[in-house]
Length: 269
Length: 349
Image (spheres, rainbow over the protein chains, first blue to last red):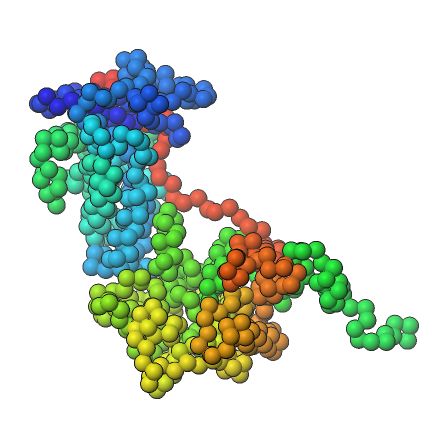
């Protein structure tokens, strides 16, 4: 039995839903999550456990109390006896790449008549630099057992294209002409995988089959599609959080990585 | 006759006398070195080009909220040092440093199909480089065709930039250049320095005179006005000394020649043409009043304080107050409230 601890923010939810629906044979999986708040997230604490640092104000206290409720009263968790830790919801900033692609062409990859033309060398350098910038903060156990797996925060769902949010603009431009977008995000994933591997981390890119041609996430994977509809003023316009179907594909990838079936992940076109 | 003066130097403003204008000025007090000839406002579309100091000028103007044209833009959020290595976000198009008026004129002529430079592709270690901007792609291109395709794209963006300029800001860098002996094509760097191969029978050193600088810049202005009759020009001289000279002189003597020629050319241009203004960045940085404080330890690179002092004088003179950097298109997925709701729902099942 492989013992896995999942740690992260609200994007742990998709994995949790999938696990509840269908656990993966041969794997024992535990979850520890806290909702996202800028500047106050789960970290490695001084005693070697993972958890939220002591809250400094009322808002942080609310997050800590919410996390305790979610995690059966636990405020931190030890992973020493785990075979692997999965950090879910790691930010990789795909929107930066979307903005770049929305106004640039790339040699051999994208030719739309954009004002800016990038060589392959420059595009590769940009991907590598963004990947380095997206590395998790280093901590002492980065390369030691348990094995550490990084799962990115999924790209927002394509329902974003219906939104008036200015963050949707580059994605709308890519939707109008998605030439080369898949190849560009594949290159970005490769750069991210390499940068993480250099630090002893296993990076599992967002599964290709969950993405749309413009690089967003297929809305059928949303946790609550009704919450993403901008036409509904009461809706939260949540394009970010995926549900059990998305989580199930990620669980497959995690299982493949842990059982040595690396080709399923590496071989994904 | 009550107001009669004994000398034309009597009764002038304090700034006109060395004692009151410099010697008694507090160190680093910028003084009154600049009085604009015409106003510069945020409505103007500003195009920048020139030597490396011109990069500071463009950055400061952007920081002040001026509409600085960039026809080969990159989005915010990319590593600035990396994009600068590839020549982005430095000037209004990705032409790299343009040190001489001859090179500027040549760029215009090439962009608008009047005359193409010779020897457009240089080699280094099996890679191919644009001889007119050899540092713009640090590792070069795989093929000569790649270089020419990128250059054609760049020239189209140069045409776009030049065509929309209300104000063309040019910083003159130096007078020394290397030219093709047969065709007169001028190169931004000596062949063999960044890329290419130096051929003494073909590549000739040239040190421009005031008359040549004036002739080239006047020709450029004439072409620009044919394209855009309302365009005005703001000229400056880079205070950055030469890093090396091929003139045979001591580098300080060679620097003095270059800067004197360029300063004289700028003065002539501004004096003869009401639509040309001169901004004294050279004087602001090199003033004896600063005791060298505006240079780095190598006595060549201009310090951040120097750049700030020069550009602040420009902005103050035009009543331009620096503005905050505009927010980029925000991602919509960082709402803490929304995240908490999603997590609660997932764990509630």
